[in-house]
Length: 222
Image (cartoon, rainbow, N blue to C red):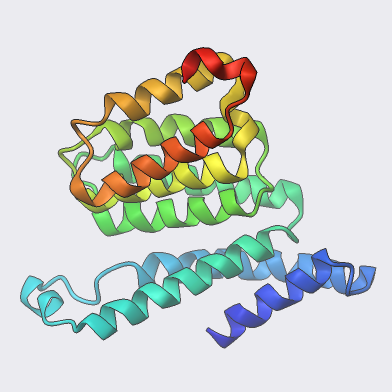
């Protein structure tokens, strides 16, 4: 956690012009070395420590909260460090992540913990604001079936909505292509009956972010 906090502080300093070009280059090299390792840690940290359901149920609220806090801190560090990574490297990392996410989600016997971990990593990259429109579009298409499917683990749908909310927040202009805007509105309104209880808050958050961005040119969609 201390390392994650330190990385975020360094990148914030870099964004504010508080470090030299050489230091910025060092951060870029560090990103190349650290991001793959951090991805693996998030994937492992989001997995239950045991397959035994009784043992999982005995985990105290503080233990669950601690694991969640660790994952959140790591994801914040990943988002920050991603802003320092060379663009080709980051896009390659994103493509590998999407390949693993789709393979797991479409396997028919998907591991919910793995899917949720991959979605958490996707959210980190979205919040870094360094993904290009093609990457955001690819991720958007991958999220739609997870958002529509109410027969999967509720955690997957909730995480998918979280990623979509991050996209609405950080890549707002992506959703104001008229065709895509209409498609997104239909997605959010059409899933009212299939949104699981755990995911409903995030669905409403997505709708609120989009509606808050409306101007006169989008009045017909209100």
